[in-house]
Length: 164
Image 1: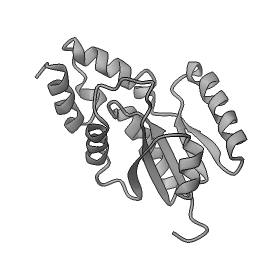
Image 2: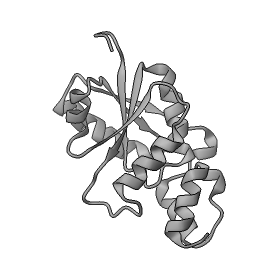
Image 3: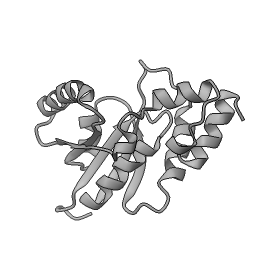
Image 4: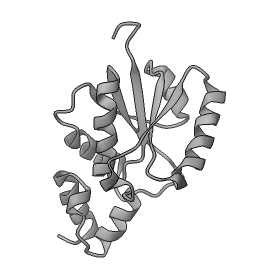
């Protein structure tokens, strides 16, 4: 990457990655020279999938999307972004209810490192209600989540939830 390259990070726990997440990645990819999907290791959350399982699901889901990479991090996202030369943090906004939290987080990130901006992308309307939590809950009760996650994720979700 030359010094004029635009690098963005897209952080999340991705437990699991959904079609809504992938929609954001596909929207971000043409806007930047490189997008790094960053798996957040958050000790406050109790994920269904291990970090290695989530990384595997992400890698399999992004095959064929140019200039997208996957990494993991813990700590502050602005520190990770700075370390990898990113100038932008990508965040998805599904609804107005997401905005207040995202706004507060962006302002705190700016206080930590004013050289890193936050860019919000809205997913396709089909995914505005979609979250990993909802997908897991429906899957745990045997509901159909096929249209909400990539096929490889669906297989892992069914195994993990015991609904295959």
